Length: 296
Image (cartoon, rainbow, N blue to C red; front, side, top):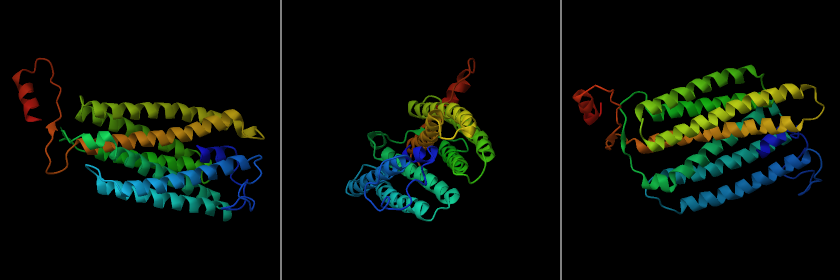
């Protein structure tokens, strides 16, 4: 959100040097400098917290996914360092259409890693055992990965539009693809696991964040059109465009969480899980009961 505030307030060029600001530790906090400097302070705080997190995770052992947690912890640290360097390159060398777009996307990749790490060290992950059998193709995990990837592509298209790399048309086309992938994944989840509460909650979160993001997208587009003739960014423009960026990140997180739930609940090859219950049509008799017992 702090980074989005810099972009929406046209404050990206307000501080010309890095890592200092106007050759000072604390620059004069006026105009767009306030947004850019606040963004740098928050980035420094996140970097410190990520270092502490990586050290903490590397010293802890969990019932499951210990190696994955260790890797994700240090991956997050590498990503935040790369993000800081890329932000510095954006200030010193410029090329905003490329560097600023890459900076925005690297932030989303970092967010994926943090959400995934939080999930696999959570009490739910540690106390939940694989319990579902899935015979359909593609699997929910595969669909979740595809949807998450499509959302990331859409975020790239949105970041490129905000930073002037291309127009809005690719982003609008991407919206249609994201809609299709979200609907497909949700229908697949309901078809494969119609009664599992954890999967249903994941689908509900995906639906909720997607619906809010669609509304914010239309509102942000309206605000952009209204702000074309404005001398300075309006309050409405700033609020709606920043909210739309935040909504994209939350939709991405919801897709990651649903994917991880599918990975955790469905046993890998060689493990056993309970067959997913199959709804029985009224009047199907003993044939439907036999299908449920056999896991068909």
